Image (tube, rainbow, N blue to C red):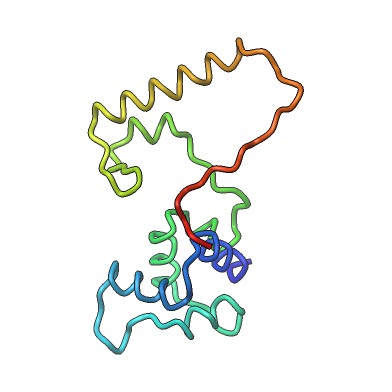
Length: 137
């Protein structure tokens, strides 16, 4: 389960093995003998080798998921946004930090949207439009 989840998270962000290794090395600096490499991560994705606890923790932190999710212990990774907005966790959007008043306004927008959604008429064609997050393929 771990290899599939790691690959899905990496490809979902449209980053290469080398990019991931570089990002991990920037986020978690260590000596040159313990740096992450593309071939090392590739071996994890193919199930040839298993990462240490510390490596799994680094990956979970980088991708913003739990170690339980990454290792396959739990099937879904859900977060209640309302709890996230009132938590002490620093939040950003497109790398722009959100101040307390921003968090409150966004919370109010989401809450208003969900309450207003109940009163909207159902259309014949309910569908999800594609959201462009600015990642290139």
